[in-house]
Amino acid sequence: MSVVATNRSARARRGEEIAVSRASLSIGAIDVLRGTQLRHEFAPHMHEFFAIGVMDDGASRVRYRGCNSSARAGALVTISAGEMHTGGPAADSGWSYRMIYPQPGMFRLALDHAIAADEQLLFPTPFIDDREVRGAFDAAYGALQAHDCELTAEEAVLRLLRLLAIKHSSRPPRPGVASGRASVVRVARDYLQAHFAERVRLSVLADVCGVSPFHLIRVFRIAVGVPPHAYLKQLRVARAMTMLQNGASVAGIAYACGFSDQSHLTRAFKSTYGFPPGAYQRATRN
Image (cartoon, rainbow, N blue to C red):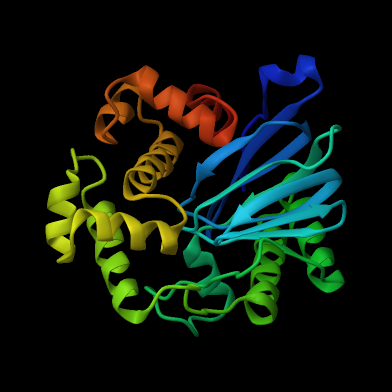
């Protein structure tokens, strides 16, 4: 198991701190994060991976799948891959938390391939209260931080993911979206994912979906929580994060992901995740 040195945010002088590291396991790489006394207002964003964690101190609020939720110390955090969400402090003191970011394929391994490769697990709420899962998370996080036995860490991670999937995942339809609307949204998301690095025009996207631009914006916002352009921006930021993990240059990534220049990528990345892309790359470089 390979773990890189931690990167500490320049915001530490204000009492805030974000520390990121990476564990390279045989089941895949997994990022590990600890945030302390955060007061950052995260813009609406998404990840290509799951976000699983625990609130250690303070209080946080999240908007996820069209609903506002808040939680205090002890709550477990469950954010599904590909789901738009945002968050911020729910108290003046901010909040502290620990997170791990497993790739979707890790859930398939944890469930012994009981789900199809293209089947997406969904956690319908961002916060849960489950003592058994909390214990499994603490064991997995500790094993990833200890980095003295890769097998121990892998077993702990897979046990956590299996418990979460069996006890708390579901696949409910999105509220307020009829099947016909859901089909439009699915086509739009598929197109945006396939053309995220290109200049996407609303008229072209609406033609692909077979609806008017106004109708597309309306049903997309209902289903996803943001309009198509905001979703496209977050696709680009999420892909940029993946490319940063692979060591590509920030300038090259900006071009490859459809940003106008490096500063454009930096602004979008920092607004989304709370730290600039260069700092993230240094923290997660193998």
